[in-house]
Every structure is written in C-alpha cells, then in structure tokens.
Length: 180
Image (cartoon, rainbow, N blue to C red; front, side, top):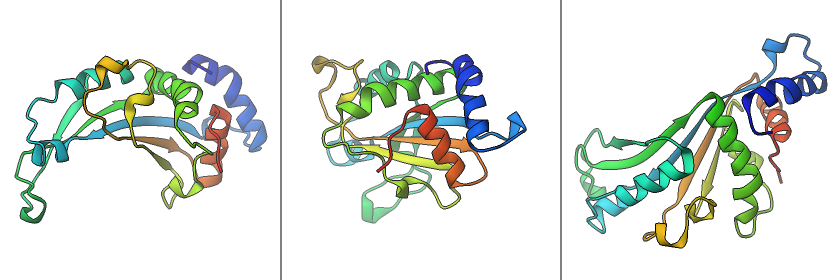
C-alpha cells in the first residue's frame, strides 16, 4: 500500500467487510500523521541556536518543511524561557500521510533495534490516535551518516477517524502495522 488511491481501492473494501460495516463512509480512515522532534533540551542545555540540521533532516524524512513550536510561558524550574523553541513538527495529511506510513511500516520499523511490535498501550483512551516514539531518527533510509551530527528522538502520532480502539487497530493492521 503506497497511495491513497490504492487504499481506497483495495484496503477500504476489505476492511469494511472484515468489520461488517455496510456504509463505506463509516469505515475508519487515517486523518493525519504528526511527526515531531523535541529541540528544547538542545536550546537550553547545549545552547544550540541553529536548528538547520534538524530542519533539513525533517524535510528529507517527511517531504515538507516543519514548523517550529515555541513555548508559551516561562518555567524557571526547567530553565524554559518564553518563546524559546521547543519542538519542530510536520503535519502530514492525505497522500503524504499514506506514503509516510507505508515507508514507516516497511522500511523504518524493521530497522529499529529490538522491535517486537507496537504496544496496544500506545493508543489514547478513546482509541483514535496512537503515539510511537523512536529513540533515534537515524533509522530513516533518507538520512545518511553525514546528515546526523546530533542524535535526536522522534515522535510519530497517527490520528484516525474511528469509533473505538478495535476499529483503529484493525485499520492499522490493514496498513501493515504489527502489534505485540
């Protein structure tokens, strides 16, 4: 599964049959994928002001420019100042989201060391989104050794349109995800 058209043609009817849903519009669908890298610790502890390396790497990984999220208020215990860069994130929708998930399932997750499947505890309490954390983003095939100076973690949040966690899990399994 690589494209939105292939999802609509092949996976959607099979998923509707599996979940015994007669209306195609009621079948769970992918709403968006949010890819985020936290940069707050670099700004405070290592006093790095230039985040071009992380921006270029996220552009290579997602195919679009990330936006920088800044802190809204200062918290002195965490050495966090107001309007300090905290995170870089990309929101992928439609075609880009499906192609990113295809690459994520087929190329990235098998490269993660000691990967035994995604925990079902990663779902939120309604079962409409799942959070997957990676310790290093250097497992993406687009990045070479010369691209990574500082290793950083990454969080991938997949937001789904579904009624409950079982439908969300069925959709992700149809997309190729492996659960524990």
